[in-house]
Amino acid sequence: MSQPRCDTPHAHFRIGRRGLLLGLGASFAAGRSRLAFGQAPGDRRLVVVLLRGALDGLYAVQPYGDPGLAALRGPLALPEPGQESAQEPGAEERLLDLGGMFGLHPALANLHAMFTANQALVLHAVAGPYRSRSHFEAQDLLESGSGQRLASGWLNRALQALPPGEQARTGLAVGTGVPLLLRGSVPVGAYAPPGLDRPAAELMYRLAALQQADPRLGPSFAEGMRGRGFAAQALGDSETNRERVTFARLAGIAGRLMAEPGGPRVAALELGGWDTHLGQKTRILGPLRALDDGLGQLRDSLGEHWARTAVLVVTEFGRTARVNGNMGTDHGTGGVAFLAGGAVAGGRVVADWPGLAENRLFENRDLMPTQDLRSVAKGLLRDHLRLPEAAVARAFPSSPDAPAMRGLVRA
Image (cartoon, rainbow, N blue to C red):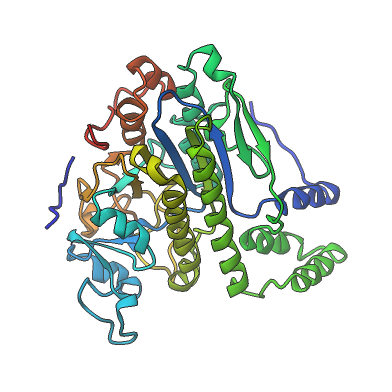
């Protein structure tokens, strides 16, 4: 059974109608999922999956053994492993056992299989060094690896340790651009494959709301959305399924390219759709299944190279401990991260668990973070990619308070 403590000057701008339409053209090219590649020394592979929108860690990995969970999460609490829901009986509703105390959402079956094969671990009550609840600011800080905004990403800075000849082999980004995580002096190219031709529904709904008061553009925008099959209030099944297929496809592409003898050794994937303010129990199913399908595709397409691969799954922040009035959750702080791959020393939940009692919540609303995401990433750079300490320090500047975490990968 898992124990509460386990192993260890500003610019201002306006978007006019022309700019809005140009922006829409770019977003139609990629939807919610993107992929980028880079090079690394040796035969070890590292994949970072960015979950944009803030995954609710308390829902994806429920601490059912914590006595404070029921009061905070009643409507969103799933039956413990081995139990059934009185309202919706069946194994598909039960949490997947993580050794006691914690249970994994049943939509993450591939991840659970990796966990039971000691090829995945869960890191709970984690956060970056920032305490912003703004998606855009928090995503920038997560990818820059700092408590302040930087022009480059921590993964690109880590790869600067490569010899000049290695740096000359450019990586590849699939989508409309390269995530900040991989931006910097080490070059990364970009390519948009055919078929990724629809934007995220949340973006379209927000743009429609912004244009609603415009007597000319508002009605035209709304009519255009209806013509493309967008529902009035919630994501439809076709949109959810499309994102699920898209992310799995990109993950499969990543695995096949990384399996090539001269292929890239580092990749970054992005998956959106995690901002579940409304009807979370239904809305989060699509993204969870997309993530799980993608991890399975990545494992299968890497083949024998999966044994030398580590996959880090992170999000910009967690969500509120309490359910809101719309049966969703709002922007929070502490959350969850996953680490998967044949190189991972898995089968564990790594958590210095703070508890869910009201006096233990961060600012009386969020899961208290007790582990730093920088420590996790530093541990992977040092022990998996085998980068020298100086390179790890350059990747995460001014971070002596976040030492590299040990024991994440196999010796």
